[in-house]
Image (cartoon, rainbow, N blue to C red; front, side, top):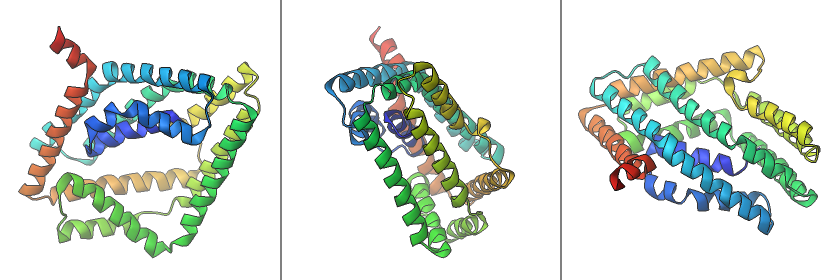
Length: 292
């Protein structure tokens, strides 16, 4: 169920977490979202106009109502870094806060997404379904192309790249801790694939009743609920693996932080400060106060 809201959501959270080109990304989210949507579906002129107007309304709401909470979280992170209060529980709290941001955004967009999907014609739905099957085939090909050792090495490389943006170059002890994290991580690709394929099949089946407003909305509401981890039914093995991997990740991040030298902490605080400044400048609420 990949639509423009996913592009908006991921861009916002990526900016929050990494602080890379925040102002440029946020100021161009309307264009990025429309480009994403047009890649998924060949829009009619009417659909494109409605989508553009809906995106602009959601962005105005997000700028006014959500960015102040982003700023508050960033300031909270900086205080915790200054006082050395980076623990597993604290990091878990950051994750819960970011999850709340995502849920609020999804809740706000849900009626618009359902209305948009109901407007698709048969040809557009066929294209959407083809893309879903192609994407799943690509996921499977990528998974089978790598050995377990290669997947582990790729995990370490991706995580190290992300941490370098915040801390700079990792030292040998931090790199060794990342290697340990990857070794302790339990495989979850089979569960992820099963979950994705089940969700995609439910989405495809829902599209077949999109001309029945009541039935379609009920099915889509069920799918949206599955996007919330706390309401997603999973078999016990998947729950255990997800919990293990989450704990493993949080402990690893705390250990890498505790291994950080003064230069890395200074870089981290500079990144946090720059990110807070960017969001303050972008916040519509702050702009309104400045102009009043």
